[in-house]
Length: 112
Ligand code: AMP
Ligand code: ZN
Image 1 (spheres, rainbow, N blue to C red):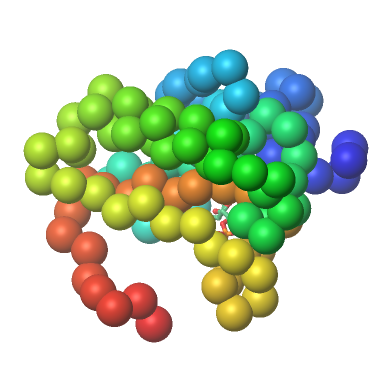
Image 2: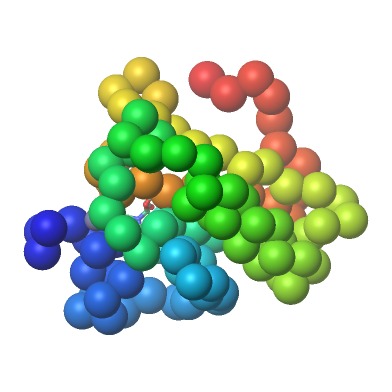
């Protein structure tokens, strides 16, 4: 999976602004931030999307790292949004499972 951008970031072959790491996941700043805080949490192992997760263990670990990074970056109290875009209709553009953590401003709902 050498062509996968997030696998390359996990391996350190592509630079990222890393903000956190746990046993199964890393967290880094989105290259095109949609909010003052915009973090991506990705599993170290390649899964194409939410549909390919074998069970909830890595997904749970992603959520916990996202929550920890949100706290460290000071957005816990005001709140933030955790988003997993999945497939074409979900707006997924990078086919390596990832969790967006967005915060630092009030976000609109519903999404477009
Ligand atoms: P999605 O549209 O849910 O698949 O989100 C993919 C996200 O990955 C987008 O918000 C991109 O800005 C972000 N992204 C793509 N390449 C990189 C990169 N090299 N480093 C950080 N974020 C990236
Ligand atoms: Zn990958």
